[in-house]
Length: 318
Image 1 (tube, rainbow, N blue to C red):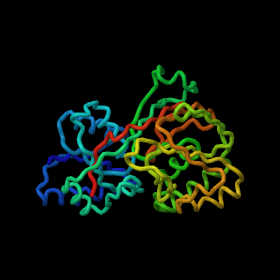
Image 2: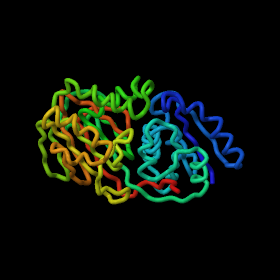
Image 3: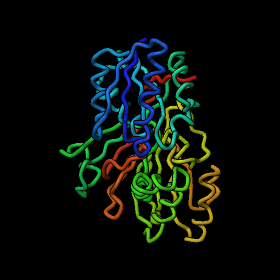
Image 4: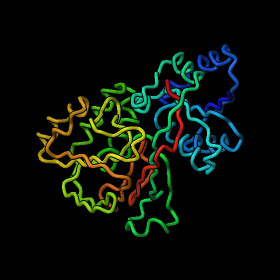
């Protein structure tokens, strides 16, 4: 078995870099056949993954956080060779191992390497999102033909509204100085200050919805949202559907009181939250909160289309 590793040195505020020698030493000690590349700028992992498919690598290993996983997956699918698509391994050295939690992949380096060498795999669903690279303020019906249209593939979830603001703060100084849990919690509470609820029009499998006091919209495959946040749902890794979680504000006091439930998993007890399931979601442009965050990073702008790709990716698991 041949392994191609893609390292993100800035994962977890640069702590990934400190683990390179240990990872490489363990692989060499076990006489594993591998090569690696180190990312230097955003989307390098997409390009490296794309090239690795064309070079015939059997297993590509994302070494970083969930953002690195997202980029590696995108490269795998952009190559467009499903009959040659390598398996995905994940050696998580990022901040919040949501992908690993969901798929029960360990995070200790020694244990993950044993998992990779074990060769056990499973097929999982993947999400695809089409969006704009620039904030152009166009309507959904102009998305497909727009020159700034982009697409990405994701394994966890998409957020619109409060989510991009939380991610921007948490990925900046908050997690660096406060750690994963406190950094994300602080970013959440501060982002809620002066956050104005939004109007948003969406379609779920051709069913139309209008939200008038929306705080955040999550569309996902992974019930773990970020840094221990989660939502109990019936979603499964290979059930060919997405969960859609709109959260509307009832009152500031009620919303703040229910924040701990995001960490307990029972946030659906909050009266402003509901859970919907579907295979595809279309989201109209919103001028107040046009940003889109997925798998931990803010990457683009509304309008957007999200769909599930059933059992499209083979991942290495325990």
